[in-house]
Image (cartoon, rainbow, N blue to C red; front, side):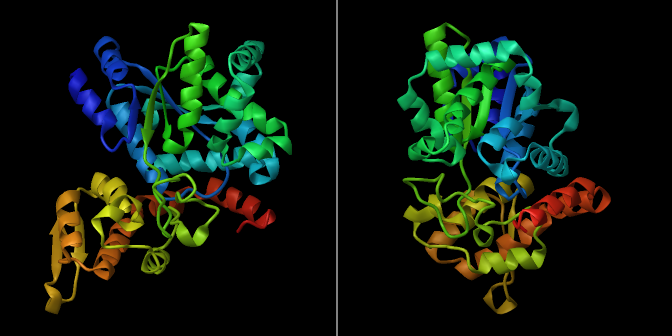
Length: 354
């Protein structure tokens, strides 16, 4: 696979590369670059992770050595799972199972915990160095990466540390590329800015879109309307049954105006989950309305939908069936290895979150 083919694989379904020129140069000069993506272990995994798992697989197939980073300290700062580090690590073990179930090649990724880094005094030297190169106002603006507003820094000072820790993680792991959803963009830009000031190697940033919740998206603030475990009725988890998915999809926001395409959660599931995973979408309509119709490309589907040839209810039913089929390997995996999933459910029940 040459540099151009690797580039196309990495950038498909991506929303932003900072910068495209740097990525191409990296691929031309390094056969096995390094990449990382970080996660706060915080609850059940939703459909947005299917998109992320596919991109991790793309990076691995393009020759990257990928680190999946469990930000356990960060999750504690952010009060996830009652801020209890044992609860958080229980969740991380479950999430690792989720990636395996979603097809992430385990021989091509490495899992690390933030705890592994913070025990090194060199980490804290870098924390101070990054902090001295970054203004307080810039750090507070970056607090949106943790789903927090600037004002919350006034309530709990630990929240200010979070963006600096995330930037320091990148430098301590010395990665060529930092990958995340668009909601983490400010952290990556903070890292690139600090690298410029300190003369350190600047990470390339790869961002994929955020899947909107089933209530619909918001072009002005996709992070606010993204699919989230905190909004269960607007969120499909990877453990939902076929019946659960169908029930939730019936209520999904699904406008038929082309200008609403990017905020239509049903179409975004087609674009970023179903077509990349299955390569098609089959709509099973009653015989009197034409019977089964199959779409082999996302653009073919949207043309039919926006022309009125495909009705919203038929689209929702087809997407429900396709999502259930996509998640069959997840159900099979956890049927054989339920231990970590069951342990997390005990935590969530104890915390009143399930």
